[in-house]
Image 1 (cartoon, helix red, strand yellow):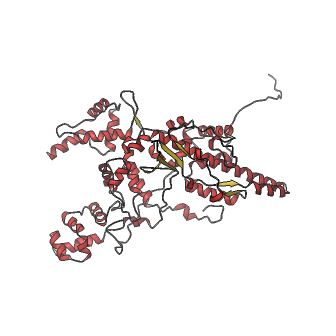
Image 2: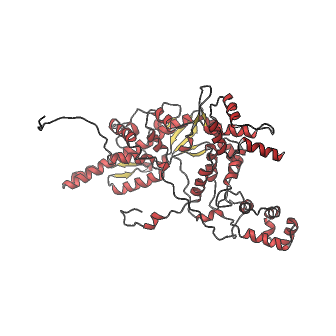
Length: 518
């Protein structure tokens, strides 16, 4: 066979990761604070971008798209044709841009991972600071480019109290519903480590029982640093003494009468505690060694409050209204007049190239911001539609939900939904929740009906075991039979796994414990 040169014409497709597509993907998973910093940097770098003034009379979204009921169709195919503000996922260039994004989500899913599963900072156990009793109340209550690179800033990270408690909660609490309560309680911690607010209002807000809130609180009170989640000074000291195995009856009486200790009324304290003078002095010394401000171990870092990205409220007709928080949406415009002026004055070829690049980047950024906002709105609307039972009836009614269900409903890729729900928060009548909290696993129905949320099944298992009679301890097999009678199709090993996650002993251990208590 002879070799000879020849010409061939072939047609093919290939994925090209342009900087603009990388930017659009990164914008999706940014929090509102990160996005604000990013836009501020772009405003400094691009002379054709300018921030929209609040009193300009222009709205970022038209009234019919800024707020939508969750029961409406998920798709928006009505572009407004405004090139300056764009049209979200329905841009004039949607055919090419959105298709490229979907292809990138499919092919590069392992490269561009969800920001919510990024490596967490390594937990650092804080040291115990010197006690400061002077103001204790019983109420508790850089980059390389700018030349300022600091090597130490990349090697250390001062963990906040909220981060430290959240890491412990993720390890200690397995029930998603209980984690939801725990996250709410962590948000109520003040800088001293004390819990503010009452548990009854928390239970009412979350739509769960006060008993569940208190059970979660008791588990959180075992976290480090000792004394955290106390509701007053006496409870804070009691938690630390309990951790040291020194909370005896005499010490409990002393903690109940701290006002006498403040008055140095030692004679009355000796009578109440039933101890002699030497023992009382030792007890007072132990209390003085405790830390009345456990939260101070993490410094006085100002905690940035969570700003919701989406508001959810009930409309007059009973439907849920979903609207974007306009305060978190950067308002930027392309200055077309200034572009025309400098473009006419440009003489050199490199100047014209620079102006052209700035104009293209400015237009792309504005369209990407609008695309991000509309994608968040679309995902939030479907998320609210899927979890309307939780909003109406409380935490016990969370439905099983995964990324695929949302993605199929709004015709997007799963990784796009994953990025959208990362670092985003919903403000609902029951509180502010991260979008990720609404995704839970499912247990099949024995009768072929709607699946059951895993946390609701765990709660049902716990109720069955708590209702056991003294002479009738339920085995895991018996629990499986009872659940299947109620329409829950579950395997024995799953029951055992959920029971162990709840910290409940096996049937043999429970039977021995009940015999010993009889």
